Amino acid sequence: MKTLFRNLWLADGALSPLRRAAVLVDGERILGVEPEITASAADRTVELRGRILAPGFLDVHGHSDLSLMARPEGFGKVSQGISCEIMGNCGLSAFPLSRENREHLEELWAQYGTALDWEDFSGWRAALRNRSARLRAEALVGHNTLRAAVAGYENETLSSVQLETMKQLLARELDAGAPGLSTGLLYVPGKFAPPGEVVELMRVVAAHDKIYATHLRSEGNELLESLDETIECALRAGLKKVHISHFKTAGCANWGKLDGALERLESARAAGIRITVDRYPWTESMTQLSVILPGKAGDLDDSSLARLLANAEERQRVAAELAASRPADYWAGVTLVSTRCAKFRGDGGGTIAALAEREQLSPAELVVDLLAADAAGTTAAFRGMSEENLRRILSLPFCMMGSDESARPADDSIGRSHPRGFGSAARFLRRLLDAGSPIEAVVHRMTGLAAETFGLPELGRIEPGKTADFAAFDPEEVDATADFANPHSPAAGVLFTMVGGEFVYRA
Ligand SMILES: [Zn+2]
Image (cartoon, rainbow, N blue to C red; front, side, top):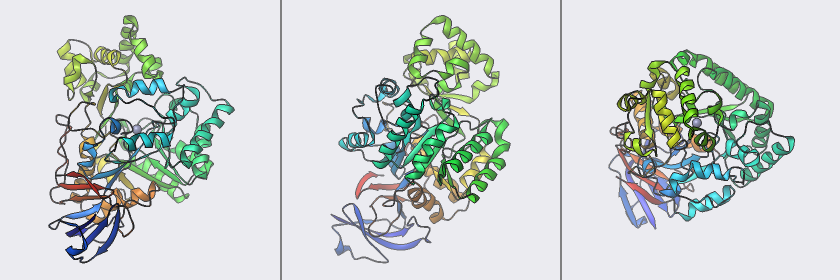
């Protein structure tokens, strides 16, 4: 089947100025890109009426590892022009699985109703392919999953045998096609890893000429120290490709650190490290609500936390500790996004402060109740990022688009999304176009640059021979419509998305 796209402005992903062109596709591949191609060359013709044809957008930071199996249509992503997502982020990948980590991950992903019947990268990929996922999926090897496969979720220093096993597993997955390694050094068990362990793994990544993407140990109070740690480790390991995930300055006390952070990125680049970042265009983060627990409770994996909070005395103790660790005005900035706790299932979008008042509980007591009912699946959005810093980060020429979300359907059957799950690509475009960036430069960051950075040479360009993944959009209209009240509202101004020569979304 040959398809001709015409009457369009081409943003080819390679930074070339916009130009009028016609694009001919044969099956999965781009056959021709010419100023004019006659309709008789194709079986069907798609008229774009002067809108933009771009390579499909790459979401370089997603978490659809399991959600895409549950709902292979990937609606939240494809409806905003995303054709490919890099998964396995923040240290959390769906492989390698072993007796040590399988039960924990089954619990974490129970809401998706998918049996984890694979062991490695290739098995995970085959499972996704068997479900005919509409979104193209790539996945980094997650350090937390990898470490847990060898040593479980305990606070342990690894033996040299365990470290060697991790390195071999990592090498196996990179050889099988995983584009790199991700860490989530804020989470259990990645937080227990000393820098030396990360250096050893980086050496494996460097030997494969792949990328290391990191959710830093701290994105706030110790942001600069965490960047220093990352760069020092990369230099020690001889690693050239480093990517900082969802780059931010978290907490208003840390907003002044952006200059220092950017200086560190520049000096790393000067030292020969190709350092890149991604960002979702919102100032609220979202993660598991359990990350705010202080002390020992904060070091527990989801199942152990649920066991601890089954005890009423422990619940009281954890709530008291939590209350003491946060200022009273903190809770108005924390919004419940999703939970399987039956009582609060319909309360996504409400702040912890408001919900606690309604329930006549203290905010900390409410949090503990939510976690006792659903430690793994309760997620919240946290206010605490600077609008001005967001603007500056988005303007960096090496900043790509990363939604930090799972692909979800239009309904909330597999949990509610942060609005970034339905609007990141569209808002990334809108904000940068409004700030005066040329269309081809914004598109380049979302496509060609992203594909090159993550080692995907078939993607990200509209050129003969490349894969036929496209996003078509109207540059006047494109924008997110999702917000915390209506997070599953699809983006405006996206005409269609094509993956491997097939329409996966049409407005
Ligand atoms: Zn993360």
